[in-house]
Length: 300
Image 1 (cartoon, one colour):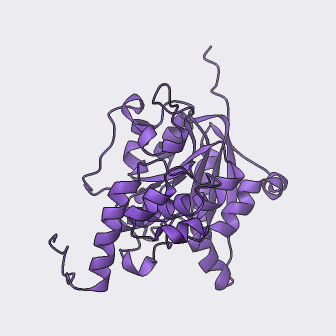
Image 2 (image 1 turned 180 degrees about the vertical axis):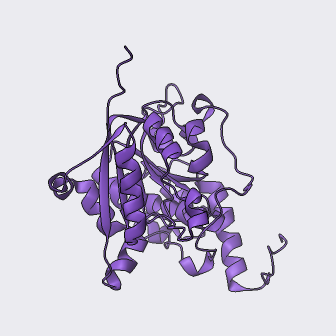
């Protein structure tokens, strides 16, 4: 048996649950799950074949209580992250096996939607059926939260194998503030989401906010012309900060409230995330701002 991390008791339910999920994750997170192999997948997960034949839910969704971790992570710390030297080195086929061309072994399309700091994956889960032909990536820096989202996606893909749903979403552990251009080439993305980011209330911590003048230039680099940056927060000061920086940047223009009211991504973003649901339960305010990526200026 593996050594228990930290002070975790190897005999505790939490440790046993994590070990079982980790073994399951290693087996299945890069496997194409469909009707042809769902029984084999269920067998590996310890589920009886009769349950599969009856068309019932095969895998239980992961339980958050077993994935406890700090709410925030220092983006300037050395997290020993893995990242490609350049976008061409990124093996996307391992994340989206359902979209691999059998003839070439490569993806039939590129990732075009990114949820930066995806948390527990609620936004991606709701975006998936709304954009079935788009590949959606969540980036999350926290280890256990990333593991939770991976386990959630495996369960959803398995339970919906016959319908081939949730094949177009996945998550990777990464630091978007440092390595975004390592994953995405110029003008690759259509949409970027920043949902309820860490507000970093103290002024000396403002440099760690996910929206700054320098970072916006990187976001503009990976966004195509006409692409959209979506922001939502329940902290008015952070909302004003993000709006101010985006409005001051020459490559972004704020979209109108009328546009927001008619955009389905805004509706999904407002209601899908776990943090958004928490704010709604507390009857808190949600501040939304969306910005279009403008064309590059002509060089005279």
